[in-house]
Image (cartoon, rainbow, N blue to C red; front, side, top):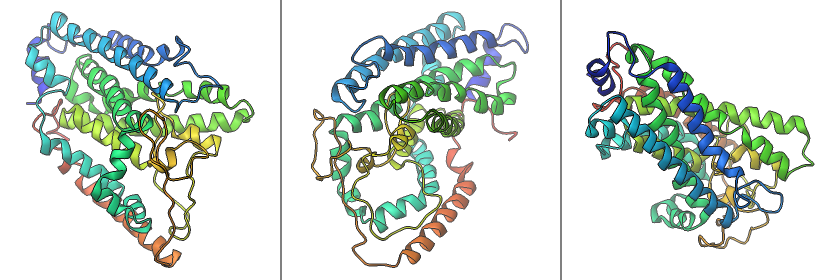
Length: 370
């Protein structure tokens, strides 16, 4: 029997009586979201400013400190509720939060599933743009993690967001349900709304730092960002409920940040622009997430105007650029046909492996009837 289901049956005060009320779970969700976002506006180092870009190392360090304290506080509150109010054993609390045990194979399977979905973009970046050798050497990964934007995008952002919005909020939401296993769809669709809402503040941040951008495009981009972050939240909530592993969703989140949104139209191959540095204000806003991290490859996330291909250590706040051209002179049509064929195949394979690659004995709810 799934972990939460067995604990719920044992500790409920009466039959069909939730451990905590729905109102309490919702209040905690709103509070955790506020504790994650609002501190950004309390300090001049973290507050959005036209004179202090979000990729500045000073801003990133201050925001990482802020969300670290917020995560620590929210973790203590959740553990206290589960321990002193719900009377769960300590080891079961760690399992419920997805912190323990760490199953390497089980953690890697959802990452593999996510990579299959991005088979087309991986083909474009690795084969068409010729980056596969750099991937094997790990040089690009090292350079990215050695920069403050890379550390934010692939470590601090994914970990803190998944800790708050999956590891801490989902178990509390589960325990507020009369029958957790019968409420799986509700949990998957509703709890990620906190995650999506936490991104709305980027509208204010974007308008503050780009005052000449018209209101309608900024608003539309905000709605689009809210949509795709909520969709990712649905996927991450499903993975967390299926695997009971925080580490699985953190890896999937970091991978999606690295890949960015997949190409759904247009030609593949030919000359590729050497600067992905976000010269478009709209592109910059679409890439931002709660902590300020941007999705996409390091080349795309580098600061505007930095096109020299230099390696910037963590102190600089800049990520390396990469100039890419179609060195092999292959036909754009051939690359494009291959890309979309692989993209479609990846979607089909993702669907077929959706249940198999997320199956785990540590799942938080019972999926036997699904």
